[in-house]
Amino acid sequence: MDSATRKQWYRLIPLVFGLACIYMFMLHVVHDLTSTLTEDEQVTLNKLSERIKGYKDEVTLDKLTEWLPEARQEARQQRLQRVCRAKYGDKTNIPAGALEGVLNYQILDRNHNVLYCNVPKVASSSLKLALVNLTRKFDFGEDPSKFDIHGFYDKTNAIAKIGISKLNSMEKAAAVSILDSAKSFMFVRHPLKRILAAYNDKFTIHSPVHETFQKRFGKYIIQKFRPNATAEEIKWGADVRFPEFVKYLIDVHQTGGFFQEHWRPYNDLCAPCRVQYNFIGQMETMNTDARYVIEHLFEEPGAGVIPSLNHKWYSKSLLEFYQEVSKEDMLKLYNVYDMDFEIFGYDREIPDS
Image 1 (cartoon, rainbow, N blue to C red):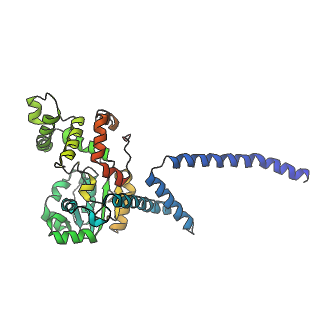
Image 2: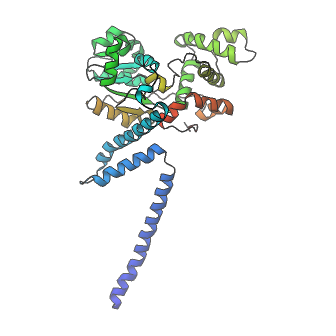
């Protein structure tokens, strides 16, 4: 090797060393990342990798954006099927009563033959607004945010005029047939976030709308779970404390009582082990999930109809609320919503926000 060639190789040594360091650093980052992924995230990553390897053309950002919700959905459906098989075995082994209440929460868009399982406190207002908007048959006026969407859905004749029906308004045989044949979707969120959202909405807001609700449930909760409650506190039921609400949920579960829809477990509301939903969305990935539902289930362009989430501010952080609950009651609460955690892949750690 002549001196000129040696000089060229010497100049390359720092570059090669630098590239090697970068490569080792990236391996370390990827290892750290994958070691902290949840099971569903790891499956999603694997599904994406398979698609990238099998794709012959250039992988663009648009293509990855298209693949991500599909890969994520495969992971969610895979988990759901595994958990449901472990719990119920064959689908026919699921208790017949599991289907009875489910019909109460199924909303059918007859224009697109798409079913939505309406889950309160999981962007249900936004999703129901989106369903009406997709019919292209109704004018919300200048400010859709002020429109009483829940009151509108209570008017069976009004929603029927624009092609929307509730399955519980139909003959049972026809409703079950639609349940098994229509395209369908549901949305969930971390169970602990939903529980807190229900508490804040129903027990911390003082208005005529909430007064009836507080008298119905709040009076009972305070009387049963607050030692030395005053007659005035019991009379109004308007200042239920969060730990008391948690004790109430545990008690309802243990005694086989009535679960109001705002805190009824997803597994009871929508029976995902019985109903084969085409898409299961999560509030944590609402933007991409909602767009996918609109573009693939409804086969409509997504622009202009993506649900907007109303972020409500609480007096304390989510962690602070749950720190008020005893460890014993937290374990019991996890048991109440055990299937919701398992089916939808949520861990039992209290989320940061």
